[in-house]
Length: 429
View: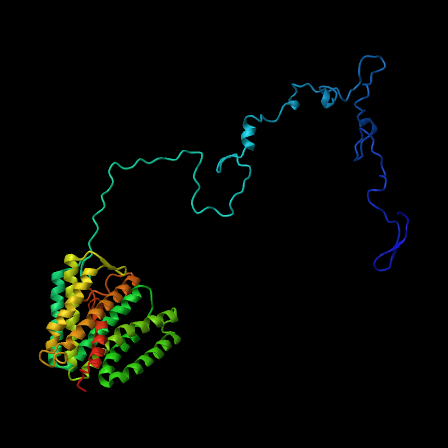
């Protein structure tokens, strides 16, 4: 294909197309001569098959270039069997056999080496070193006997009972004084207690990592109780609506910017839990018989708490719920029976539930309602505390914990008592 004309991609003519590899080399390579050139003829080695040159006198070879070697090159067939080149590289029956054998994982004889891309979570055991066997201790520690649940259904384990009785009696005496004075004093006392309970709640959730609008929530709790007393039920939806709006603005304007959706929900929950349920006190006090309704709710709740504490502490064996491991079925039943007994024996003599001598029908119904509502409030507050990882909401009441720890059942009993009175038409107005 040499000396043929052709055309390139642009139509240009070109000549002398050469195919590499088919042309004969310019220089012939001769045996014994370097292909790089530059050596003289005197430096060229003779072919190894030629006999050595001798001088004219026959005195021996002249400058034999192969004289420094042990001998002339040999073919492999001519090499002795005991020559080192004929020996095997390794003994297949010994070390080499171990190297090519598929051994167990972790040994040095694996056929493949496939290292992990990432280091393991735990260090691999050292297969080359025998594991240390720890001898068991001579004596095993004796585990303490399991603690029996106790308390009001029963949460009284670890409480200072005498101190709890003293603080409970003092709080009850303060409430009786307010009841005796009238609706205004009762409203003021209950509003202060609700505000303190709300402050406990918001402080507890803050310790758990939430960032509620505490000031706004406490203000809403106080406004709900006061508004329910001054404007009755019509004030409640208005205050709740304003609370939602101002809580959203609280986070929108940057007063707090941490997780608005979550913290708005926590704030509103605190307002509903403490403020809305507590506002039924204000709604009761609008009626002339309101103090009697409130006293009935408080006495039945105290009966539930006391009965559950005593019965659970004496014979409590069966755990009630996972959210409150200290509460027992026996304590629950004892508390419900005590609440019903207080309703029949005491509340049946208090207006408006005992307005007719010998008529215990209203007290009977209230006893059943409180026996169901009080345990529900107790367990719900235990669930909240367990979720927050705390034992008590506060420590303002010596021997009891916080106000929320004593009013948890009462918060559910208040609306139950109010609607029971509504159902039985016990309101004077």
